[in-house]
Length: 513
Image 1 (cartoon, rainbow, N blue to C red):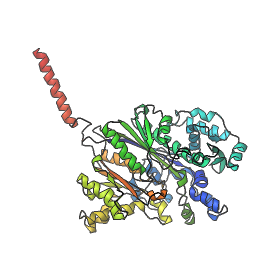
Image 2: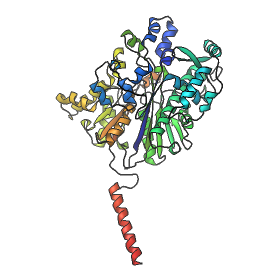
Image 3: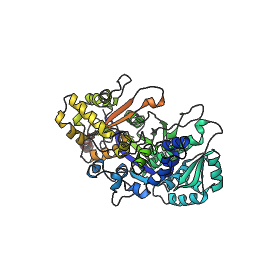
């Protein structure tokens, strides 16, 4: 069987203090209940500068300038240990400031819903025009047209006709509603959807810039965030995927959206692998943008404990899956884990379904997988809110399952957990931390011979949608390529030998004639 491969990955972060204050649901809910609350008054004092966000070690790991293992050598709190010489540009991606992102939101807006104040728009146009990756983006000239006046923008926001856009405490723009009374096209929904689209566009542009993939080579795009675009007749009709491909010049691509809360990216990766392995599409991109609603989810606890509001980052990613090239790590489609409807919801049942069962199919024991990447939330964000160290809890459950199965001695469990586990480093953006942030690192480690196997685990809480009480989970194994390219059935050395033999036979025949 010729398995599909992961040929590249890109990751984007956008620091968004204005969105955290004005669009994160913790703050918007607080503002509705108690506009004069102590939390809302204190929150601005706990915002990070862009420089602080760039030098934060977990953010540097997300964009590829450091490895997850590097966090083991940094004492916590990590926010008090800035990385010396940190830059916004990384091996896998980039950290973008909020003003540039607001400009990008206007660029990707197809229906003239984004209005930016004239001076602000001119300033961000200059920045984006000089950006090494976004400087050639489609529709950049939108930043030369239709600027807004400050009074006009303020009137739209105060009249509840538009969502505000703030930068450094100043109202610099807004997103208007797209329909007079359709709630699915309200200014609130359109703001969130444009945030998701713009951050996805940034991630895909990064993927195209930092890998060999050309825009015209992309044949299918799967978008797997947690937003929904549509109208009153089909609230989640879609299609984020094609709208993102359109902005990035993927003229030969089609695509669709996949949703399953935090497990969505893992589902999308499996779908992409199946499409590439079957030969239906040669080059598939799985991508997702960030969720403005999740900014500052735990900020009340951060503020109470005197910490920075660490959930100021939108996350995005784009991953290239293709037919087997004999080089890049393969996705073992013969051992995909899934939480079945009848699997049960206990921690043991969940881990058995998405870890032990697929490994049994592959003939592997739990300790034989070099790295596990479950929910990779940054513990520095979750622990102050009482949620604990989520990745570590997952690793301990995996280790306990290995002990129960007789694959690991109880005395060796913590040592094994330290070996196959990693500190969490991803922003708490729901779908963003669920397994996929490690794919870029895993690919590099496998290609370098540092590891042979990694399991990516996506888990989701379907009960949040109030249609079922079910849980969700999907997993797959990334593995070193055996050197077998698609459809040949031979490794590279055998192919070379066969070609050489054929050429010698041809030469003999030619001389005989």
